[in-house]
Structures are given as C-alpha cells and as structure tokens.
Length: 331
Image (cartoon, rainbow, N blue to C red; front, side):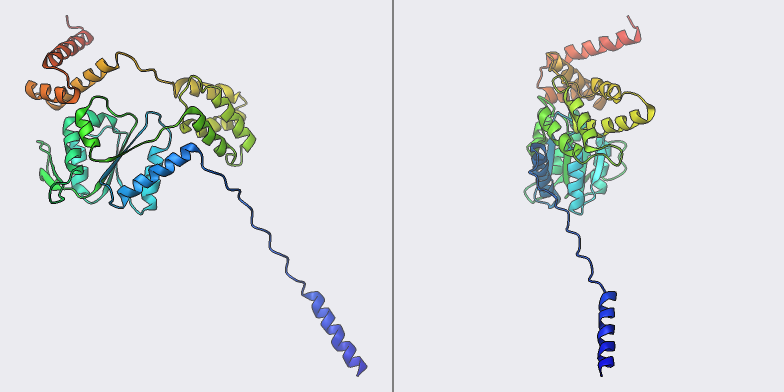
C-alpha cells in the first residue's frame, strides 16, 4: 500500500516538474500620444474637404498654396484612396482638348488636375471647367467644346467631380474667378517654423537603419539655419537625409551637399513691380496661341483675362512682336 502511494506521488511530482508554467506574455509597447502639429491639422482639414468631393457632396475643390512641398498632392491622393476612389489624374501641361477628352471618357469619375497652373490662363480650358462644374436648372452639367481635332461628340453631360491643386491663384484672371465660384477652396500654407516642427517629428523616427534620430535631428537643425532666407518645404527633408547617407559612404562632408541644395531650392520670393506686366504678356502669348487666325478673338480673350483696354492689347502685341524680331535678329 505504501509502495503504491509512493509510486503514485512520485509520478505526479515528476509530471509536475516536466510541465512548467508558460512564461508571461511580454507587455505591448506603449506608443505615446502626441498632439498633431499645426501643419498636420491643416492637412487633416484638407482631407475632409477631399472627402466631401469623393462622396459627391461637392462638385469640386481647389486647393492652393504658394509654398510647395506641404503635401497637397499626397493628401488628395491618399484620401481618395481611402475612400476607394481611383482618380483620373492630369499633370503638367494639359491642353483643352486633352482635358475635354479626359472628362468625356470618364464622365462619372473624380478628375484630379495636379500642377496644371498654365491651363488656368487658357480661356477654352476655363470654359470647359465652368461647364463641368455648374449645374443647370435640371441639375445637368453640359460640357461643350469645338475643335477640328475632335473625334468624339462636341458635347456631353458630365456627372463627375473635379479637384485641382495649384501653387498660386492667377491674379486678375476673371475667367478663373468664375471657375472658383463653382467649387470649394482651401489654402494649405505653413510658416518655416511649422515646416521645421513637422520635420523634427519625422526626424525623431530615424531614417531606415542607417540614420539615428539624433543624426536626422542634426540635419533638421542645419536646414533650420537657412530659414531666414529660404522658403522651406518638406521636400527638402528626405533628399537631405539621403545626401548624408551618400556622404558617409563617399567620405565627404554632408553639409556641403545639403547646403548646395538649400542654395538652389526654396528661395523666398519677393514680389516685383514688373509681375503685372509679365502676367499680361503671358496672357497675350496664350491667346495668340489659342486664336492664331483672329485678331478680334485675340483681343476679346486678352481683355477677358486681364480686364485691360483695347489700346493695351495692341501696345503689348506690338512690344511682343518687336521682342520676337529682335530675338531672331530681324531689324
């Protein structure tokens, strides 16, 4: 009896020793909450404006800001992606014909015009935008466009939405003002210190496995030393860090590489008195290109864009012609 009890007890203790308790799970890392920066708050508000368009609660949105690199394009595209929308994107130089075809082929879509600033001085293009954004009495938006190059119908109903991102709004452009009156408008702006504030938060995360948070913070401080004479943007941040990585491999001073970038990018612009004349000449070049065969149409388009007089139109046209002749060496 005793032997059986001892055998049972011994086996139980041996079994207990062979099955240790599992270790306690490691605690989840605690991510400290931080309030958003001023620039992040503005980016979030822009995201809400984009959602209004994505959900069909606004026909269009114009997001602008003279300082580049604040995330206009990034916020627009990421927000549309989150909403399950793949926009039709037009960038850079865009002719009225190209824009008409894009709207015609995608009449139910969200059209994103990114960095198409020159198009907003083009009267035919502005006419297309006005029609595409303005609903008639029955809620229809009828778009018309005539061109000898057009291979599709010259009119159609557009039911989509349009978002355009520009750096600066054209001044004294009344045709563009008419477009703006049909859409929501949002300015994304930031001071140098607000840009540096967001850079510091990004720097605190380090950069890959090569640069520590302290390395990145040193770069941000170096960039900040130029803030008195440069218009900083977030576009400077990552390229500067990559220059540091390259400099370490090449055995050169990264400060020289980053400084050369800062000397060429982001200069603070000072408005010049001649800007008004330059704008008028740019509008004149545009209308001469749009209406090469009709002086009457050229004059009408120029005066619509600039609200200048008939005499100013002919004076600037003569000046422009004289400049072209001088450039060709014609006396």
